[in-house]
Length: 121
Ligand SMILES: [Zn+2]
Image 1 (cartoon, rainbow, N blue to C red):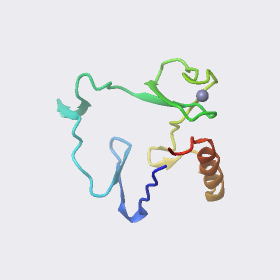
Image 2 (image 1 turned 60 degrees about the vertical axis):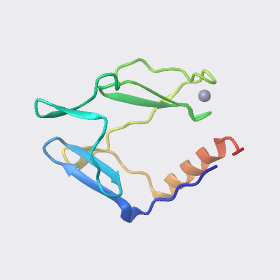
Image 3 (image 1 turned 135 degrees about the horizontal axis):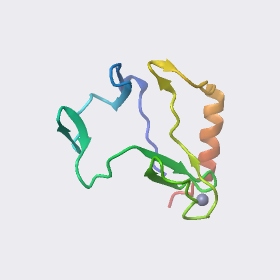
Image 4 (image 1 turned 120 degrees about the horizontal axis):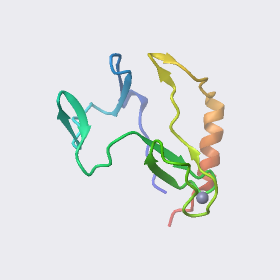
């Protein structure tokens, strides 16, 4: 398994209060290559699956599926189990709307997921 380490000092956060959007970039912010400006607003290029999405993950085998936001809940394409949604709103109008997990809970969650990953070849 390839390991990736990212220093927190290299993560840039930029909050657009008017749009209520938090931008996160690793390193210096770069221009998005797959978006175009249409009538003053940014949009994905045609054929790039534009629109709001939901990411679904199988908690058993960690398969991710990305679907339109309003699509019905899928079953895991590998093991047919129920999948869980991964994108949940945490900030609305600049206010944190959910309790954030403790660092120890995040650590346990990550270790649990690493334990489910297949061994590297
Ligand atoms: Zn599965």
